[in-house]
Length: 395
Image 1 (cartoon, helix red, strand yellow):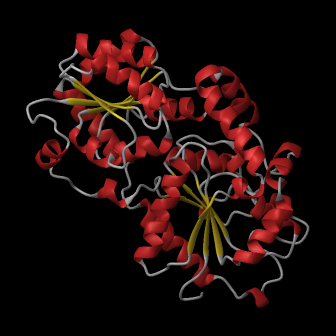
Image 2 (tube, rainbow, N blue to C red):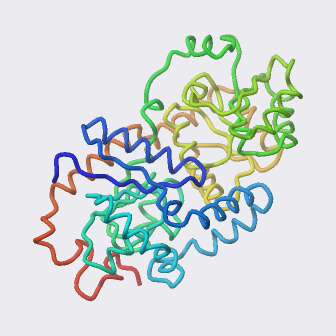
Image 3 (cartoon, rainbow, N blue to C red):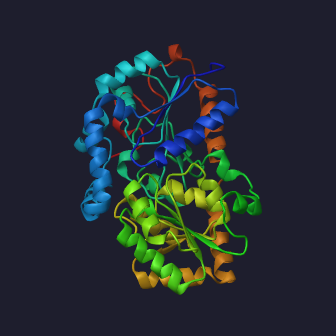
């Protein structure tokens, strides 16, 4: 293995979870002196127009047609790479991908987003670049599967079992957890952070990811439930939704129990001072909360991977899920009681793996060390002659 290999991490701007995972892995590589690490939105590079259209559809469907997105997600969840749809999705833009790879010359590829054109190229050519995949959710979708993947890094034992049911060999699966950035693995001085953010030591705070809910009408309804039925104050994060932030500031400018913020790079600090996170069920956000032992209520999860995450983690009693205002109030009241907070904290801690990025980088580098040289290889390690499609056992 080269002392400073070229690392390509394939990410995406669909939400920010894929990018956050890529950044966490990049941090771990750089901490080991490996600096030629490139995080690339590969689909955006090779298909910028189509990428923009599909990203807009994804963001708009979350607000205006969530059930449509959920139907499409569920219809394709059982997809395998040798299905026509799987081959099509993984082959889109592959000629541009080939040029990109020839220019970059990566020594390894890590996917944090399931655009697997580079893997598909390896099936169709003598390409020997080792490929790894880091799943960013607590549920499995068929788009992540590809026979050329050397190893999958997954969030939980239940995902490992799902992959094995899909006939992925057990030795090619590591339950690493989902990587989070180093800031979420560090202890914090709550009193100092309270002062920094202009909050009160004697109050308890709910951190509301308002940008995930999109419109001020729904956010005001949620806040009304919090203020009328609990003693919590609220920190409301509007993200990049400027319209929502201005609307909320107009409505709560003089309300001492509500604090309105826009986009922040200090999510780890705000989580550290909070008693509960009220959010959608993005896999990375949930993992960040678990790393800080912050109880989570998922309110009205979107159909698709978010509903899958919420269902999987509710089943493991690691978070609360509410689909109605009354259920939300019940969950909030439970978290006001110490025994329930302690129980959910135990379950979160059982799932949390704070050094996921470090474990992934260690195993990737170990795999590179053990690989024979390119000159000695005639086939990819996951292939045998005439069996490219069934290297993982896909039927």
